[in-house]
Length: 196
Image (cartoon, rainbow, N blue to C red; front, side):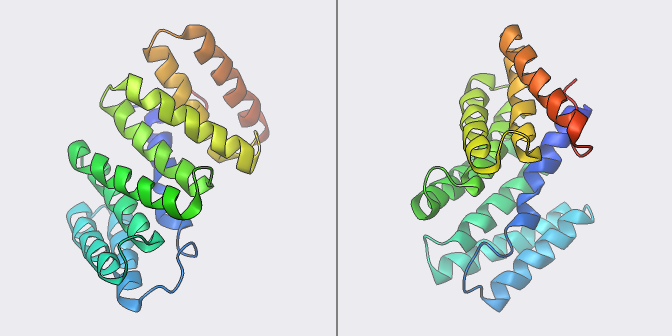
């Protein structure tokens, strides 16, 4: 994560830690406390502690129901923590399991599905597995454009990652087109970090 673009993708992936509080129903106080403590520890850079709290959140969510958005959130948040620590191999199955739960409950076209797809794509991107990252970024982008509109910052997050992967795969024309779209939105929205 040495470049500004990589940092932006990572920060965007972490939005999951903030976006999901209201996305789960009938939250248990203990599960909610574990997630809150894990997120707070993460924000303070205390990754081992965050990992511990989020593992507890996974256990609590699994005890309540095996196919639940609480479990999907806990898995995805724990995946983010593993990603932050460079534990990529441990993060992949968590993202995949969270994605399967989300698709089962929310459908394949929900923005939270797009967020998890983007997290998994960013992970594969960081591993240099561009052939795996590309279709995930493309799918995340398509969902976000449809659900949020073409100028939304979340669309730009997927588009930025996709442009970088296109470059790595030698697809320079596609990369240039994606970068132009990022720039066009960035000119309108100060929250967008340009692709470099």
